[in-house]
Length: 302
Image (cartoon, rainbow, N blue to C red; front, side, top):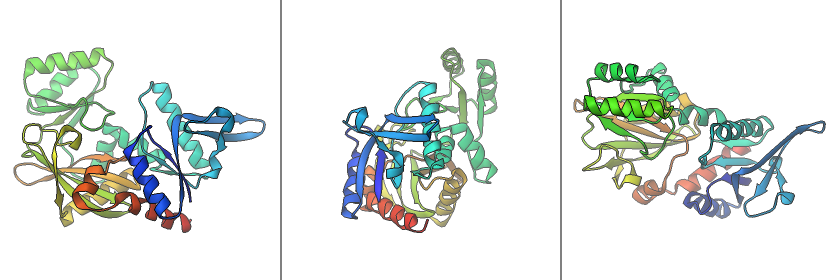
């Protein structure tokens, strides 16, 4: 296979995937979102890709890649993001396999859409209210018991997530977010005892799981210095994770689960660009190699 990987410069994940790809006899190339060049005209539609570090005159056709793996979505304007998703969609429509698919990426990156789809699929999610006006957010704050987690609609690694349990602070928080033209996403705080479970799903199977814990932060992201331990997922955790990945259409996904004090399990998030550095270090599982081998196997069946 010839594999293109949309990844940031210096990405650990690109280096890990490149290592695994070469070991399995495949070629691998890092790509930048900013250097995807679609063209539409009398000669039809085509998408040129400029390999990292080269001039535009050296661009290659997207059709030369068997698979393009999405490992990043760089910051940008709404126009940038919409355009990039459009290009991924056109790559897929032209026959280039994109993993995860544009449709699954669009779903997973949007916390409201993901939560709504998970709930529709019968999966347990925390009580969630989403609105645009501060008055509606204050009413939601009351309805959710005056203890909520406020999250950016688009976000990762715990960035921008705050817990609000004081009415005065709630008022200031919601007003500020409204003035910043942000959507107000409020989720009832679940007292999870300082830990959650990350289950990694690949091609419809559970790869493994880790338990992430933090003594002084309700956010249990490894990027925020949470501690990771190997975890044997229960049948219920596997079931929830597989159903969550299927609901969003993700080929590879990190599913976050947490428990309240009575032992009820909730599905919190589906990460369609999951990190696995801490996962591999903790479990000893070579995720990159499994990922490449799985892609090669499924590619051969297409």
